Image (cartoon, rainbow, N blue to C red; front, side, top):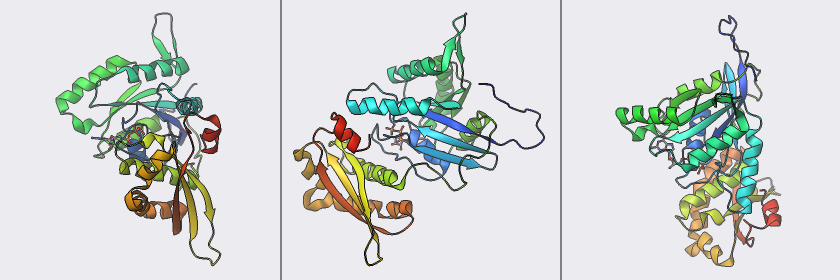
Length: 317
Ligand SMILES: Nc1nc2c(ncn2[C@@H]2O[C@H](COP(=O)(O)OP(=O)(O)OP(=O)(O)O)[C@@H](O)[C@H]2O)c(=O)[nH]1
């Protein structure tokens, strides 16, 4: 695709387009997207693989709009769920204007990164006759978590990443410390083709409130449950029931586990987990719904949902 950049343009140019945000689990994708968009959208948690959908964050500036396509991380599918997640990645990668490849500053480049690179090459690049990769879309390296390194270490890291692949740009950032986030935004904007604003100013995400709430509940549970079964949980908003008296609506939420034995763990002694999760989410859910609602959480068993196609379908995967 040729880009119509006007280097000597007098009139301000408006740019818009899509950026695929890729990187191995836990590299800081959600945190960076939130920093770029300015409000929490995807859940950021200290546990890997919490981002399950191609959630989009929309970064709107007077001169540009960049739609960020988050991905669940390109990982080797082990289960049917993993496979579906990869299909989501496929769909979100197919129609983008640039790729932001996130690499953590505090870890060495590993097999996960190499797998992502080779996957991106097969989708977006070809080799010329000298064996050099020619990219159809700009491939931008975003080096995350630079607060973990000293200046000297960072220089070495950037050299290592420069040697790893032929990136069109390499931008270091610490989303956590808000260091260089504007620079990342600018690099992404510069990589967009000219185009009109695609979404209204105040739209931050394309997700339905129901999906956002399900993600919030899952995120809260991942924090709540230490290392116990976080990946066996699926969350779905079952219904939103209006109050016949005109009071608060009730949002009915199903929390699905794979086995009966997991139910009491999720509920907790004296329902402590349910109570804490509810309390933690009240404000965020009200904000997402745009009004005050009542939350109703129900823990249910969907036997082996991660491997059963029918269950996956029901749970929205
Ligand atoms: N020190 C430091 N930690 C960060 C930074 N950005 C994110 N983290 C931490 O890294 C962990 C993972 O961050 P996420 O944003 O959830 O990562 P992710 O890539 O979206 O994770 P998945 O959803 O598993 O793919 C969290 O504990 C974050 O607090 C950063 O700039 N500096």
